[in-house]
Picture 1: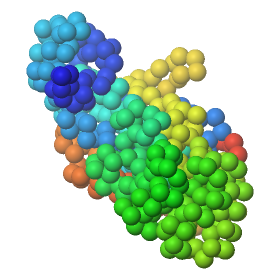
Picture 2: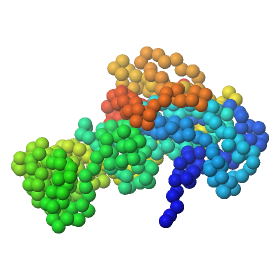
Picture 3: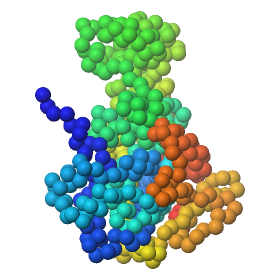
Picture 4: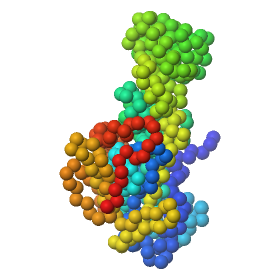
Length: 436
């Protein structure tokens, strides 16, 4: 029997989800006395992926959950020793580690643009430096999914989208992807862990393998309907789609919940499926389409009689969700602004403040970012909100409650972007970032 991995610290502890150089920097800073310097780190993206008009911030709730558990216990320290990270002074420091700093950030679900300070960490260097890899791995991944998902939701024009990407990515990434997708308007996920952790509705019926298991299509459909009821969704394209639809209605009756199409020219298939269902009296039976959909394929189906989309590969992989390129940079130490001046990677020193300006109708017109304190005026909205104070979360919410709040915020701010934000053609960021 294989040993259980449940006691392995790298499977359970966020402190080891990091790059080794965070610890080597900390060790050197402890040695020369700079670890206690008050520091400000900011997370921002220098640019958006090519042609994207906005980004959507996601993952803040997951980051805060991980921060609450950011402790080095005996198992974690032993894992470090086994990898040669064994300096006594460093290990003693880590054994007593507790984050006591402050964190501010854009509300999860908000839009961001180049230079937006989406997360700010204020703490002694020896605390703040350890959060870099965790913050970036969570925010870069989840924001990429959310930014792609928001485009798909926009292309769907009110028709529901279901997240179905679990089999195309890492098992934990699949859970995070489902959360990010629902944040921007997906209605459900196929992932059971996401349902359990975040209260997301889950859905799913059968694959082609289930039909192939049976002696004929009718037997497979009958077994599914007997188990799940006539409101189920039957996958009708294993052999011949037209015959599959006829068999589905014959087995389930005209009250069949839905048929799913997963191959071929989906516009043609959906049109024929709708016509055939109506001719068989199944006028309320929905047509659901899957098969490597992205925002462009969804937009192309706008005129087709489709009732919902199942989206997987293009949502959870790099082909559809390009990296957001967020970085975690030191911008201030002991109250003194510091900045990187490397060619192509310059940063702006000093802790930032940010407001979003709107016209009288409520449409966003500009994002103002400044190291000087900004006084909101007119229709400005302050973007940075307090998340952690003195190491304590400002608001304590369950994972499900945090997701619901982020999704509600996203719905509110979505209506403030200019109409051109929803164009799928490549373009510049839909509002400019002004550095004041």
